[in-house]
Length: 266
Image (cartoon, rainbow, N blue to C red; front, side):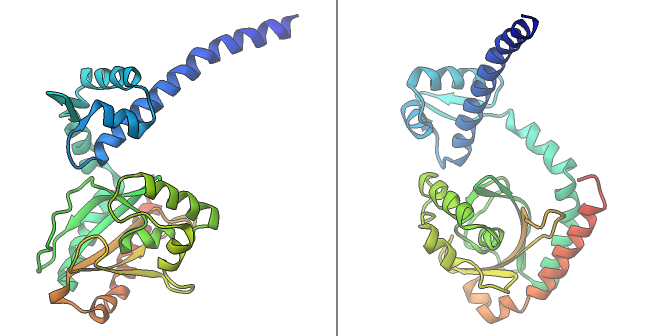
């Protein structure tokens, strides 16, 4: 009798907790979709993309608005100003970003290329640090931009050791994420990755026309890297061979960053 009563009390407590976690998960999903969007989103578009009803999506947006995470103009929604203090705190205090800045600066100076650090977030990657090289790129890639893993050297190198099951999950996620030109089958994705034995990835005209990029993964204790360092250059200032010649410097930079992170509490 006592065991049954205890189990019932536990179930009663777990019910509201589980519901609260589902609500939090849904709110974060809506917020993440607003981050991916290139322009303000209508309520109906957000509801359809997130697979939620209009009333549920509207309730979530109103709560996010109350906390300044979302702003509304007329009938569209966008990320709100409260993200700026959070972003500032991350850029100033995150061990990965703090350790990476001088390393990226050194690589950019030595190679004259733009050096960037990406970190994996689920089935996407995010630009967390960048130092421009001597030759400006043809496109603007702001910090915090969500990008697919399937396109670009910095994303592909993070999938180099992925299992067939993981590649299938990444392929499905990319095809439904709304990232332009990011959708591939699992077999097509595998064919785009570095060959066995290669520890770097190369891309040309994948994310932007006339842009070349090479990337290596940052080693970590798990053996499954979640960060990569890339060098990027306009096609008119570098050839494929010249960019790949910078891979040894990239390896050294990734190794230095790995050593600093493993020696910290990161």
